[in-house]
Structure formats: C-alpha cells, structure tokens
Length: 582
Image (tube, rainbow, N blue to C red; front, side):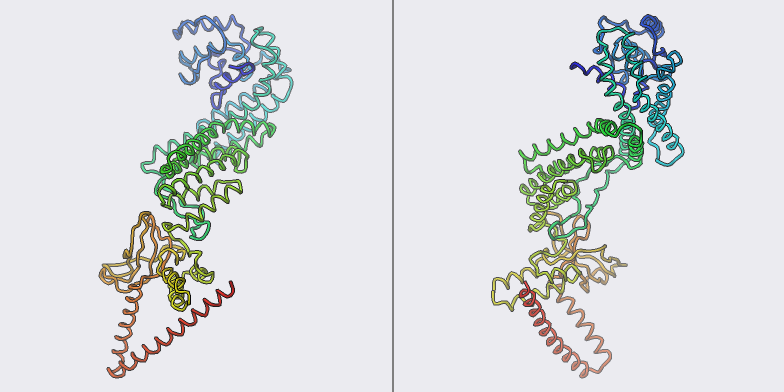
C-alpha cells in the first residue's frame, strides 16, 4: 500500500449494497462513540458467545478481512462476520470511516450534524438495500418509493458532505482516537473520496442488479441467443451490408435490468452532487468493464497478428466478450461519453483487423463483411470509418461475395433498372449490346456479365411468395450451389405435382434468407417461352379451325421476330446514348 492510499482497502469493502450492510458498528451493535475499553469488553463477550478465535498480535489495515465473502452481515451476524467487524474496529482509519458512514445517534449533539447525517444514512441505506432486492421496473409503486428514498438520501448526503459540521466532527474524532496512523490528512483525503464513494454505491447496486438479472435469464434459457441481423439494409454497392454469420454474439444485459440501472444513473445526475463528482464516480464504476473491453481487444489483435486464419473466430469472440461491457459503459457514461467513444473506436479498429486477416487467410467474405459491418457501427474516428468502408467495398466486390445488389460495372441506367427489380430486362440489354460492339473483347465481357449470377442482381424487399398443395403451386428448385460460402441459387417455378412447369424468377439464398433476385438461366428462359407458345397454340387451335390457327400462329411468329429485332436496336441506341453522356 502506498502512502496516502490507506482509504482504498477500507472503502473497497464498503462498496455498493455493502456500504452499510458491512459496517462494523451495524454488525456489532456498538455505538459509533464506543470507547476502546467498551469495544474490548464487547469483543470478549462475543468471543464467548460465538467462540471466536483469539486475535493474534499486531494491528493495522493489513489485518482487515473481507468478511463479505465469509458471510453477509444481517440482524444476527455469524462468527466470521462478527470477528471481521471487531478486526475493523482495531484499525483507526477503518474505524473512522465506519463511524462516519453509520448512525451517530443522540449522543452526538445536533450542532455537529447528527440530524442531517443520520437521516442521510437511513434514507440512503433503505434505498441501497431496497434496490438490491430488484431490479425494479421504472414505473411500479415500489420503484417510485425507491426513487423517493434515493432523492432524500442523496440530497441529505450532499448537504451533509458540503457542510463543515460533518468534517469538524471527523477532525474531533481524529483527536479523540489519538493514533499516529490517523491524521487530519486522512480527513482531507476522505473529504475528496467520500462524495464519489456515496455516488458510486448507487451505480454499483444498479450494475450488480443488471448482471444478476442477465445471468439469471441466461441460465433459464435452454437455447443460445439468436444472431441479430445487421442494422443496415444490405446492398452489393460500396458500403455493402450482409447478414450475420452463424457464429453467435453475446447476450447483453436484459433490458428490464438495465432500466433499473438507467433509472439510478438518472437519479444520480439529478442529485445535488456536483456534476464532476457524479461523472468521476460513474467512471470508477465503469472501470472493470473498460478493462474487460481493452483486454479483449488486445487479445484479438495479438492473436490475428500471429495467426491470420483465426481472424473470424477472434472477431466473433471479441463481439461476445465486449457486447455487455460496452452496453454497461454506455448506460453509465452515456452514448456520447468520451470513454464510451474511445472503447467503441478501439473495438471497431480491432474488428476491422480481424476481418481483414480472416479474408486474407480464407478468401471468404461472409464473416469478414459481418465483422466489418459491426466495426463500421462502432468506429467513431473518421479515418477509421473510411478505412472500414474501403475494406467493405473491396471485399464486397470480390468474386465470392454474396450478391445483394447490382455491380458497379453496369451502366448507371442499368443499375437503376436493376434496383427496380427488372433484372431480366437488364440482362436482355447486355445480350443485345454485346454483339453490336466493334470492340469484341468488350462485347464478350458484356455477354459474360449478362450470365453472371452476381453482377446483375436486384435487392429483395420481403420474402417472395411460396406455396403449394400436393405439389401444385409455386416451389423453389435449386439451380446452382451451395458454394464455399454456403450460397445457392434457386429458381421459383409454378409446379404441377412437384414437376416444374413455368419458371418465374431466380433468387440468391444465403443462410436460409433470400438476398437478391438475379436473371433466369438461358434454359429457364427457353422453357418459359415454350410454355407460353404451347399455351397460345392450344388456345388458338381450340377457338379456330386448323388452317386459320396455323395462319395466326405463323403471323404471330413473324410479328414477334420483327418486334424483338426493333427492341434489340432500341436497347443498343439506349446504351450508346448512355456511353455518350458519360
């Protein structure tokens, strides 16, 4: 222990709901002004009653025991709790702190702050220990009663600690105890620490309640938490967002328990304590969560630097390990707090490193884009966000990316057309323009683009219709895949007794979710034409005599060929105009 830090071990044992529960005077039942001889007599009586082991020689804070771990002190404390309480009273610094944080009673003159101090202790104690039985919803009557206790306790403590009577009494007690380890410097340091400690106790209670509730819900759940979907709509263009991979993310603290923590934090901010005292106290409470986040980021960065192939695993584990601490820091310090922003930035940068390492090692995109999506949501520095968006653009346009929108290789008017869901028309434009180009390599590139099941894609809004009875209706039929990413292409077709008859559309499916619509294959297009032709032939043959029916069908074929030729020319002109504008 360093000089001037004699208060830390004492205050650490009086944290959160244990602020009054572990008070030595509460446990022993002695008054705060009990003389050393009275303390010794009471201890000897307790020794006989509880058969306490005799105390060894020596004095000092080194003999303090964490009796909260042995037994929670109550109205009838056990032997270990009683022994620890008497050990506290043997240390002058600990005794002074416990005196100031317990009821003084009528023995202390009101001029020294007895009435306000004792009222502060009682109200604050009721609020702390009542809240510890929660968490309580923000609006029931019990929560409103606790709010009133919090307000009275915090107001009274703020008034007492701001006045001189309380500290004058503390200095008099230092003089009465007459121990060289206890000086007015101790009182001065306590004057700096105690306001923060009173405020932090409330936040600690809310924090423990949130964690206890989250742990109880996690134990009660038989199934793992579902993977949350990305918060942004997917798009294959720059800034693409894809669905989460199958790896799960952490279950954060339950909203109901966090409501209690948010309520307490709001009460602390509304209290008469100075804003800087409340902020410093909440930051102290958030420090364990901060250490957890920073340690997880360091572990992830060090691991992927040595083993790139572990980037995906480390990234998902980083999300699991930091989800709850980040949420708690956000509740304690606010979403725009400096520490919240710094931790979010650190996690975002680490996730970016994990995503890039995973892609370099495996050349798979789904996990990498998922990690980059979360990294973009967390990063706060503009340079980091730009780097993440650049990585999303590069990886999202790789050959293994799941298509969710039109490629940038398409002309702008074709991208707009694809965005409207007219992928068949976009592919028809490409097929019409390809043979008309003088530059044959460019023509072959356009023809390949029209057949590419990733470049000509349209975002899907909602799930396409599927439904059948006894094999009759609209059913999906796999056309290709799954590939290394688990992506497959399925044709939705009208079926008669499980036999596909009329192809309707082709969709990209990943993780059981329809991601995009793409053009039909050439075989499916010809099948659709044959079905329409056969239906038209049957209709005309039924309504007209055979010679007339043959004439009508031949005429229809000639008109269709002429119309298709003119439509092809119009598409070539539209392409030429678009190129000229660029």
